[in-house]
Length: 146
Image 1 (tube, rainbow, N blue to C red):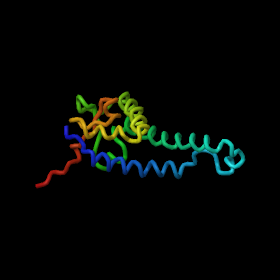
Image 2: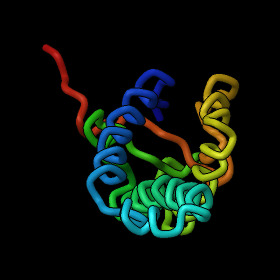
Image 3: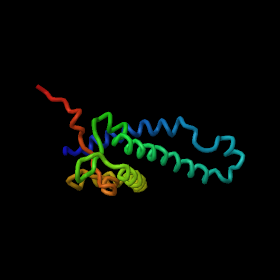
Image 4: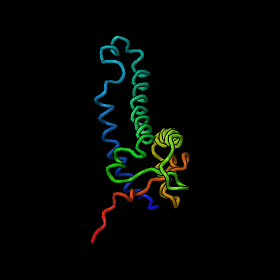
């Protein structure tokens, strides 16, 4: 297996962040401005709740994509895929679920879980370690130069 580098994974995360931002900005989440103005005493709690939901929805959507495709849009664009760290086989739905929970933890630590990739041979992040997965170059998309 050829493990994906930190920079390739970071680029894939950037691509994924673009569509996450579109979801959060374009999908109407939470109460309208008028509703908040009617009950200003609950403004802070309402905003915090919807910020949390707005962050969780893209992560959960990503988890579904991992379960179905074995990759995310950003990783797919870069020809990366997520596999079982021991066998190199496609991850299972259970692993995708564990990875999603781990992803929530990675983000809850202000992204510190991403740094784990720098300190282990299989280039695993916190969420990879939890699910026993790793990200590899998709060899079926490599171009052979002659």
